[in-house]
Length: 221
Image (cartoon, rainbow, N blue to C red; front, side, top):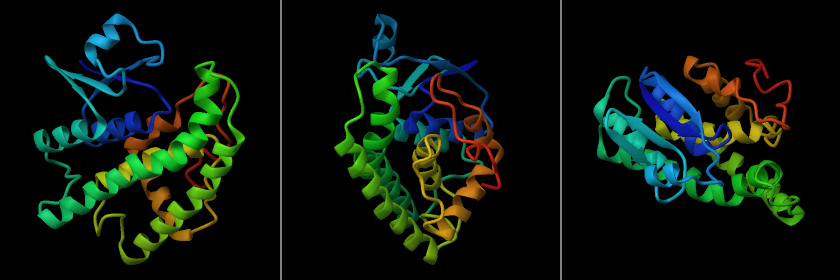
C-alpha cells in the first residue's frame, strides 16, 4: 500500500492528494505532526516537512517533485502539457502559488489562525492576518484575469497548476477566508475543481477545534 504522510490543512499535501486521486492511486493517509518531529519522521525526511510519499521502496518529498514524478510515471490522465511552452506555464503558476501566494496569503491567514493554535505557538498576529486579507484580493484578481483569457489557469485544459491553486484556496476556504463573490470566473473555476471525485476526500477533512463553515463541502456554495 502506498502511504502519504501528511497534515490535512497543508496545501502542499493537498496538491499531492489531488494528483494521486486523479491518477487513481490508492494511498493510506498518515497524519503527521511535523512540528513535533520524531526520529522516524526525520529519517523519512531530514528537512522535517510534509508531504512524504512512500511508494514501493521509495520515499519521496517536496510536493512539486512528487507530482511531476507521478505525472511522468503515470501519464494518463495527463496533468502537464506535452509542449515546452505549456509545461513552462504550468510550472510558473505552481511556483506562483507555492511560493508567492503561500508567503503572502496562506502563511498569514491559515498559519496564523489555525497552525499557531494547533502547534501551541500563541495567538494570531493581527498585522499578519490583515496583510494576508489584503493580498488575497490581489491574487484572486490575477486569477480572474487569467481565467478571462483561458478555460483553466494555465490554458484550455486542467493541469497541475489548477490543483496547486485549489489546494491553497481550499485550505483558506476551510476557515472562510476566500471572498467567492469577488470574481464569478474564479468561483466557477473552483466549483469545477470542487466537484471532481478526487476533491471529495478533502471536503471531509476535519481539524479538531476548527469546524469548517457550512458552505465548505457544498458543491453549490
